[in-house]
Image (cartoon, rainbow, N blue to C red; front, top):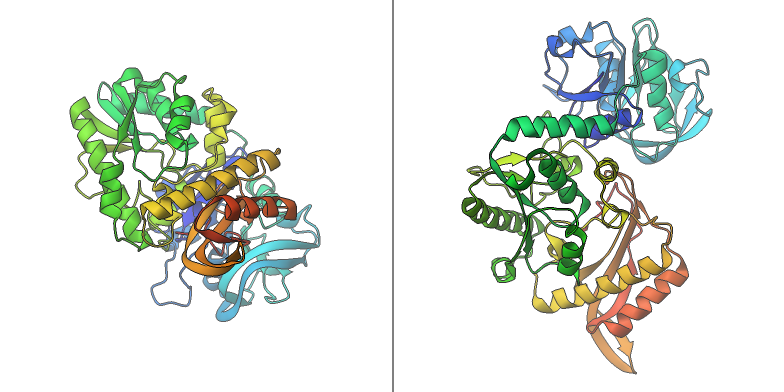
Length: 505
């Protein structure tokens, strides 16, 4: 097993995800973990952090962990901690954000075996190591940072300034593989099938004869969560689909169709008036998310009371949790509240069941296939719980909902025609809170702007904007401006994640 020490990085769970990709079990621990809790670990990986090792009272491991006799790999902040602990020097400045060219200086390094001498990596740091610690070697550099990797084979300590867990690091998986198998001698003894068996057994033991409700959207996350619980407790599970008035065109019909053959006990509730009245006049994205989250809980609480349920199932994934909270150590930056995380009240009378809370979207799809879910539902594009509320920038009105629904439907129709290889991980339209001048039929118009967003991704933690063809963009733009009343301009978002998020709010 590999222990991952969390210092608050947004990518901590992504490190765990990559380790699992290599069929090795991993577990995340807070940086203040006790040594005894790590007795089953073959190696440790120190995560990045939003903090600085130059800050007073910066997060650090207990002294006893530094003396542990197993390999340690430090990533970004983790490397800076290693450098500082062993007598090196760390300074502020020389920040790097984004892609950088890494030059391997020590060709015999086990960590870089099989890695090209010059390779693209992903950097995200403000501080840098300015002096290599005694007994360490410099093993790699970039044009901006001369100390980009260090190691001490004698001490079994390795540090890299870049993020191998991010897909933009071309040979990142090779570096992790080298650390796991050439340095830590880890065993390939973990897979997602074992997760399903273990999770169903745990759920059966935890829930017993209690009744449970599940908020289900028709997306792969909530559907897989529901099926895992159903596999454990059968008809003691009641699934609830809430029409909150923020759905895409044909959403409710498609969901009903997708779920009807899965054997789930499904109830569909119409709560459009409740949600839309509560959102009237609200523009702040965080406030919108929290209102929606609270209303979901209110509705679920009513249904739970009627069903005599004591527990609530949610399809929360790890990206939802880490963007909404502070991660395992409680110090990660909050990016945004997810309706099923940030909107939960402190006095929730239902015990939460979140079977997927440590998994990513691609892992969930693998589990869904294991559970027999058809590809149409498995690869259904992600749709956020708050629905179109987070794709209308500013206040939500019936007019804006109508405009966005129509534009979004056109985009989805054209994606279905053009994207035969299913490369678009997520594609949607966003209604901007601005109007622009246009000319339509020789007349001046002053109408809304639609932004198109399409990305490629595997786990939702990172994403690259989709390189749509000019032909595709022209077709979509022409259809939207011709068919959607109130829109005279279409723009295309070409920002990756990071620095942006996938959704706009």
